[in-house]
Amino acid sequence: MTTQAGKTAGWRKTAMQATVGAIAGAGGMSVGLTLAEGQGGVDWAPSSIMLFGVGFIFALMGLFVGLGTAAPNLVGRRLLNVADAEEIVEERSSMGASSACCLILGAALMLLAYSVAAGTAALVSPAAAYWILLVVLGGFTAVSLWMWQSFDELWRQLTVEISAITGNVMMLVAIVWGGAAAAELTAGPQPLDLVSLAFGSMLLACFVAAGRRGMMAPR
Image: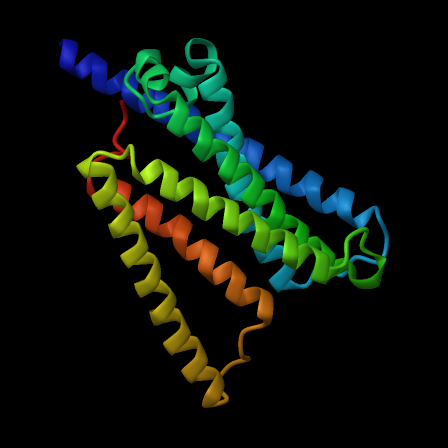
């Protein structure tokens, strides 16, 4: 009975997490695109919308983890897939760093998508947004190298798997899409599509690698 009750509670928690994430994601995307359009002169082409969406997912993940890390008892144990608040406290430094990286990286991706969509009407030029993204990636890499020192064998292996899956997904899409475009069967990728592909593949790889190791199961 105890085991069954625990599983039921776990799935209820997962359902709540999915519901909150879906509402926040849909609402945030709608508000973000509307606010950007309000600046005037914004042409949301599919490539810009896709990159904005990928960036928003990163930012939303960072926000959720950040809130959970800051308030483990009030928010963290309910929204994050952890056994209890103590687990968050034990991993607070790495979770906090990951949260900040995801939030800043997501903001940089959304800024690039917006600047390209708005063109000359953008508050930040596409070139400036690009350099901001490069600086953020540099910081992201530095933090990742710092976190690697504290990773145990499981997390190091998980990181390697994420990198491998990301590379394979990108290679497969590049071959299929590039080949089809060369054969004039479809339109070729736009520059922003390549950026979306890279970071979108990383997101997918994170979920696949974690799921393969049972880390997505309700806790």
